[in-house]
Image: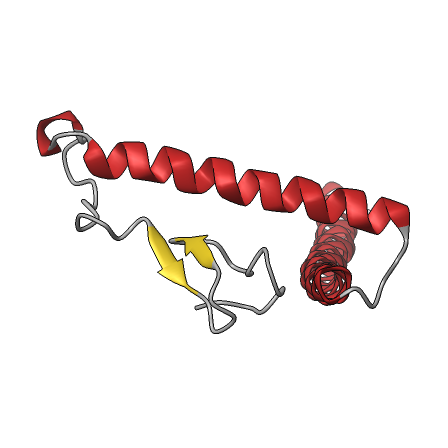
Length: 133
C-alpha cells in the first residue's frame, strides 16, 4: 500500500467515525428533547392535580391535614399578592419602569363566580379552587 492509499483509508475511517459520532449526538439530543417534553407534561399534570386537590380542600371534600395546610398557605399567598398589587395600583405612574403595564385603578381584585375577591393574575380562586382566566 502506498502513501496515498493509507491516507485515503485514514480519511475514510475518520469520516466514518465522525458520521457515527454525529448520528449518536443527534440521537442523544433527540432523546433529551423528548425527556424535556415529558417533564413539561409532567409539570403541567402536577399543576392540574394540585388545582384539583386545592378545589377539593376548599369544598371540604379532602380532609388531609397536609393538603389543608398547603391550601391555607396558598390562600395567604393570594392575599399577600392582592395587597402588594393594591400598593402598586395606588402608587403613581412615575414609579413604574419604562414599558411596564399600568393596571387601571381598582383592578387589583377580580370577583370569582363564587363571589370571592381574587388578585388579578391569580390562576385559581383561593375560596373555591376554580381556575380563573
